[in-house]
Length: 193
Image (cartoon, rainbow, N blue to C red):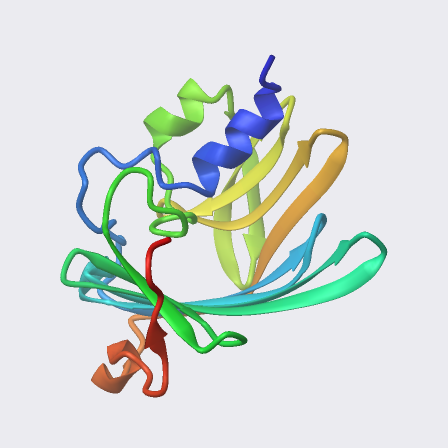
């Protein structure tokens, strides 16, 4: 049996809520959002986007414990031309996949009112997150703080553990250099096994 909190987390962090197989549409032309991550792993995530999400750059650094050992992972994701480029900075490899409803990280911070209602979230008020007034949605699984369809903060309980993201800095309509969306050099294409 799949637990409802796990389904909520999978929806939020997998991109399944997109209505089409296109790159997500942000409500503002460009922006930069910096998040802190806590829970099963800790770290940071920075999302830079332009052209309403047709160009997205995600930089994510996380640490987690496996068999008592602390491991770290650094990832760079670039979304452009309907493709997802995933760069592993430790291995100096990258993979390319077409954007689809199953692509992880594609739009993990975008939600719609319909999705929130379907998942059992109710609007319970407003609160400030990173200097923006957010609608606060609550369910038995946790709380989401949403600004213009972008989740700026989340606190969800998944299999007994609290998983949290929180925007610490939001720059809307930011000037982002086109070079941000160019693939970094020195990475080898990962071969399918």
